[in-house]
Length: 276
Image 1 (cartoon, rainbow, N blue to C red):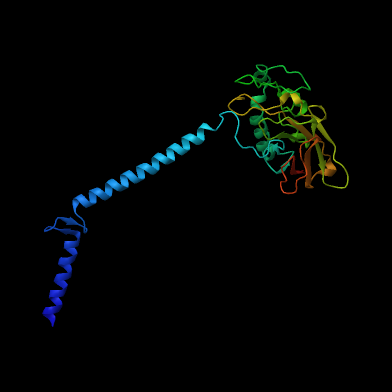
Image 2 (tube, one colour):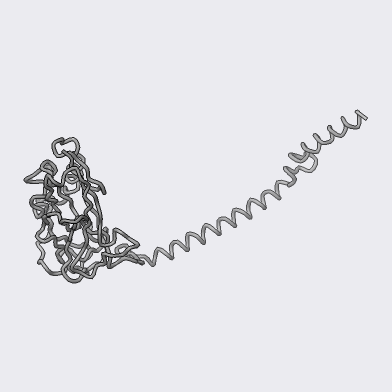
């Protein structure tokens, strides 16, 4: 009985070795070298064909794209609003520079492309008129100097009002290729509380001039900088140690600012709190 078991075990080992490589038939894992070569050739041709079809499809698709204008645009006429410094909650102690340093540094860094020396290389455009440049390959840029922001430019007050408890916040629209807002778009900010909060706008009345539109895209308009509106919050000591919610909207134009599904479409909300 034990001899039969030993023979069976030896036979199993022999069968397993023959499956890996059978020296009598020259088969490796059940196939001859020519059989394996045919399988390898089949898959080489098959996957080569798939790669070729994929490459051809991508090439055909790329021929339909424009380097300067996206083929599909679903939000051409309705940009969102964002603020700088890039914080939805601005909390600081006006007597401690370390508490508002990050806001000041963020604003200073953001405004570097708006330096007057940089912007003087751009065009002096006609206010109140769209700057259409459809016939030109590389588009020109209208000047928007940081000095236009006056008390919020960081030039006369390097702390942007944070050291006096009257902080500046910059508001800008997202870039939308081909956007031409109708009417006279301007920024209007309100504090969500019973009594109003005094604010100053720079440029005057918080307007976005038409001469900064349309935008032609990053490749055609490489030096383009968005127009800005600076909002200086004129907080008083009675406002300190209280969190104030401020909402800014685009008014005076056909741009949407009341879509409940997108709270940043034509508007932006942030919070400010100054401590003593």
